[in-house]
Length: 356
Ligand code: SF4
Ligand code: SF4
Image (cartoon, rainbow, N blue to C red):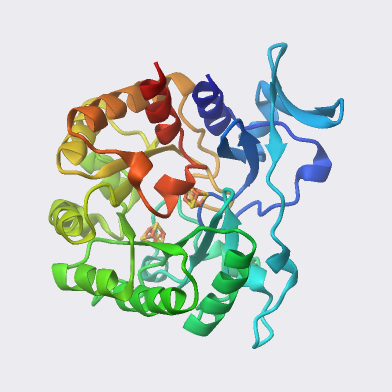
């Protein structure tokens, strides 16, 4: 039941009282949201833009928060801010500029906040990575010591895992080396499980990430429709043919259930190639982390709308059939987006499908 509500929240957003609109409106990752607890799950609920017209609202009464929709109420909670947001690193940078809380217990950071595709005006249309710099909410490059200090502090507060992502700094290693050094620093100073995210890279560099301590990897194709991929991700369009080999190598190196890819629904993709791609991914041991488009203010898709909850539901159900058929289990993923789960209802539907 709550998987369906979470799906509607991710697609429609939530109207929240003005005093709760304190988060980032724009920037890297799935900005423009508020983390809400929903039963045992957590959801990165969109609260700006299209969310103003959502049929779902968050209200406070009788001493607690509830989500209201068409006269129905569902208990909800606010995920509180971690204490490290008020602290600084030993070199005086606010820890909040180094890494953020994602979901409930996931620390997340964009190690290199620049992407070469922004230099050539060929950035992915949904991406707001460099907008975070424009709004001065982060620094261009996080060094290993800063990451280790924030990681150690976050771990003391109960964080369990960490997402290290990066823009593509160069075509030589596409950020693998900076992620490897960052992962090593986190592993030496914390016991957080580490998820790394980047473009397709060669087998040696996937091994380098594994040796540095990475537990899971996300190699994000964004769209399984080649036409949409080429149009909406023009900078990395040349990578289309490299995903399958990189995913295959990653499964061999990182192991079962530890390789995933964002699949954004709502970019104009065709249904047939999308569903075929999802099946082929599961068959190859890769978790298709399905997310509805999150239109970020300041990006080329800022005025687009997420897909309908029914469209997402249809894709989730297909993906879950495929995950089960090919024996891929997203609940065994150790770190990062799949374990956090705040931006997708995939794992919620997967778990519910086993409950009956
Ligand atoms: S590759 Fe695309 S999504 Fe990734 S940081 Fe660069 S522009 Fe953004
Ligand atoms: S699912 Fe990934 S991007 Fe979304 S909040 Fe969690 S860690 Fe961040």
